[in-house]
Image 1 (cartoon, helix red, strand yellow):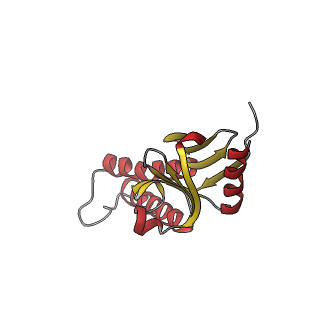
Image 2 (cartoon, rainbow, N blue to C red; image 1 turned 30 degrees about the vertical axis):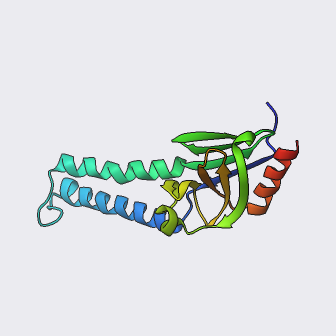
Amino acid sequence: MEEPIYREVQKFNQPWIWIILIGLQLLFLWGIVQQVILGKPFGTNPAPDLLLIFFALFPFALIILFRNMTLTTSVEKDQVVVEFAPFTTRIISEVEISKYYIREYKPIKEYGGWGLRFGKGRAFTATGHKGLQLELSDGDRILIGTQNPEELEKAIVRMFIV
């Protein structure tokens, strides 16, 4: 297997995501300590102990999910591979690409946030507001978020030359 012309790996590293998720987890853990261990009801209408413990698993699962989510973009000799792990991988052949360009985008306004999104086409983003816009021959539009827009564009140019 050949080395890709370009490879970029991004993670969800926005501090606000982690503050919210860890804050939720700490709140539920405090509720468990308060109600299950100390025997004091947590809140004015406390949930049963098992339900409280079950709800505490939700933010924990989200923390694990966000910790493991990655956006990997690879430009190979004849295709662009966008892997949004653990959910999906999209392989775009060079013959499918009719136009490409670097652009700034508004993640919330255009796509409703970061991640695997639908809005003005499909978007694969993890952080930031810069991306490579691909327009495909079938009319589809795919935005790939990047922290290195110039390098990614150079790799696409090389893909078409090689």
